[in-house]
Amino acid sequence: MRLAIVGAGPAGSRLAEAAARDGAQVVVFDPSHPREKPCGGGLTAKALAEVPAAPASDPMPARFLSTCLLESGAGESVRVGLERPVAIVSRREFDAWLLRRAIDAGAVHREERVVEVDASGGLRTARGERMHFDVIVGADGANSLVRRTLLQPTPTERRFVAAGWYAAGDSEMVVRFLPGVAGYLWLFPRRDHVAIGVGAPLRRFGTRDLLARLEAEVRRDYPGLAPGASRYGHTIPSPSTDPASILELAGPRWALIGDAGALADPITGEGLYYALRSARLLAETLRETGSPVGFPARALADFGHELLAAARLFDRFYAPGYARRMVRYAGRSAAIRDVLGDLVLGDQGYVGLKRRLLRALPRFLWDSALAKVRAA
Ligand SMILES: Cc1cc2nc3c(=O)[nH]c(=O)nc-3n(C[C@H](O)[C@H](O)[C@H](O)COP(=O)(O)OP(=O)(O)OC[C@H]3O[C@@H](n4cnc5c(N)ncnc54)[C@H](O)[C@@H]3O)c2cc1C
Image (cartoon, rainbow, N blue to C red; front, side, top):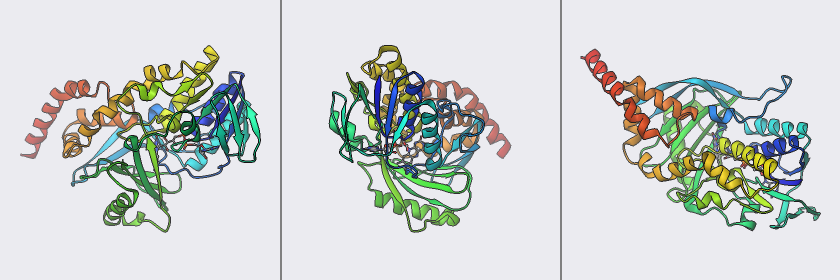
């Protein structure tokens, strides 16, 4: 099979690596490397499980962390210990490392922008070269050309806007919910700097307002990490509550993965896991059936229901007071801290969250009573 992949971000490079290993002739197009894609760079434990194997001489470039400070934004905070570490990566380093894995497996990288595609496998590069492939995959990110041409752009109401900056220095990993903003700010320490950002639904906030709010919070509470001259802003697309928003992601000779497929968590903006996982599922589909047609149903069965559940839960999750109660309860109870730790790791999904919280209730009540007795 001759496979063209537009975009060598995590989704494109992961697919290129897996499909080349399966014997496909893979060409991956991307003129942008090396570059720092706007991103926190946080890889949950479930995302780390999707990262390809690498030789000992070229280990994954990352910083590993075992605690996360959760702040309610209204004064309360709780430090959650993680059973397994999460990783924070620089996208400049991580994406280049993933692309090396693809090239090692036999994929060809062409440093060219694709400017035209069609549903029968044809494409044209910015240099005017026309080529034909058996299958074309759009792994070209949030503003995907392949998606715009073969489907339609992801609508505004399904986009999270995320903005921030990188600062010299160090910090612990912090997630702060922001009252009045259906979103949160983060401080993610990397190997030699800190990624600082904020995210919220695009339909409710503009980048400028969000950045102003982020700056005010950081200048007040983390003045050493205040911004310099440059900032970034970008969007994170996600599915709606309708399974059709996932089932539409392939045709007989094309498919969309990662951000191009709008496969990110609408509540947290986590997209790296879905980029890597959707790439793996598409590679499996191509290997087993020789066609991308079965990929969307496979993605829906694998992680799709989790994303649809997140889209349904969004308003409740960001309702006034919810995050504050969650952080306050976690401060009182190890049972709730365990649930939050598993959410940060990606081990606890939204499907089954309510049942897990109900199961934690007796221990929560016991822990709360004990805390009150101790305080008296
Ligand atoms: C501010 C911010 C913070 C985030 N933080 C996190 C986080 O901490 N953890 C997390 O899990 N997710 C996070 N995300 C989401 C995550 O960054 C994305 O989900 C992820 O990058 C998607 O990977 P991808 O490979 O699908 O697309 P991308 O990483 O966007 O890669 C697409 C690639 O396609 C290339 N390309 C585009 N058009 C063309 C073309 N026409 N021809 C050739 N190449 C093309 C681009 O150059 C790019 O290299 C964040 C997003 C933002 C905006």
